[in-house]
Image (cartoon, rainbow, N blue to C red; front, top):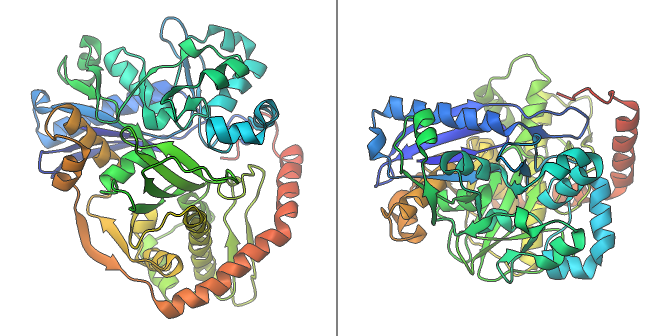
Length: 506
């Protein structure tokens, strides 16, 4: 059983030993935004979604509880969950897409300086990561901070509810800004300088390692058996890589989910001097992923379609296909919620540029897809500058379910794209890890070879389209360079004079 804790839904999948999908269930939810730029979630809602989808998959598949050999997890990364001495959640989890901790980010930059950030953290200091979010709690909610005894990441709350144990994995831990990737442990230097107790942080495991078994109480709630093996799992990017079969050096993936990521497997932690990409630990020791991450990917297309009363996605795909590359001269800068790679600015807004009297809904929709793809191509270029190359990529997420969007990606990235046969790659990766921990597979490699399959589809780039896209891509970068300051100032001014303190943007 693989459980994927996402930002907008939780999905549970069950596979058999050969990788055949036996059942899948999903529970949607919405994080809270009590103030503009806040993103937080009550962890109990995740647990309720976990319980309901476990019960649903078991019931619909007809599988007996004793046949479930193991459970593992994929989880949204970076967020912070805090527990008190009794193991109760103190406040809602602060999520990866939260931007409240801008001041704490600047404080950390001043505390360490860029050279030591490169040395100790090896990643940019950005809002939504565990460390600055924890500092925000200390500075703004001292009463809650004083109650903290345990700190971990979103998926770890589910493993805690199942086993009663406080634990995490290396991949998620390495994406907190509080972890020493060279020593493979929580950083004494970072935590002592930030004056945060190291005792709050959990023990770390490899993705396929067993961390415990189901307690009697968890078994009663889920309908599974006491003693069922629970396996560590990992951050969603690592688990999605496993579910896509991307585990070897030189392999890469491009994901368009709510946010977007380009991820390369690496045999060493690569230091980017500009700190505008991320390097995290992979599914085992001495394996890393280097990635570029954009804040707004499928979110942009979902937002665009929300502006209209009804959207038939198949009809929109047909209409988008009738518009040529470049969307009739329209460019979309996809910064609805700030940006990470490469701009590292949570205070950016999005923009359409080049709208004219001939511009219609199809042109705008295609421009949104192209803008997201250009932003991901910037990530590919940056990873390429670090020596990371791939002659094929696996596409995943919502962007892999639209043929026009797949073709755009292939044309812009200028590499062939493959698509995994099962859409729930992160949940599949978690199920493979569960199989490893339960002894069904010898290791992650064997699990991937046994389980992962691809659609009978390979999308090849069109040379003429790529050349044309590169002209638009240069304009995309020029347009951003020319209006970056304006977009930043508009965002800040809009927050100051926009919605009230308790209102949500929806």
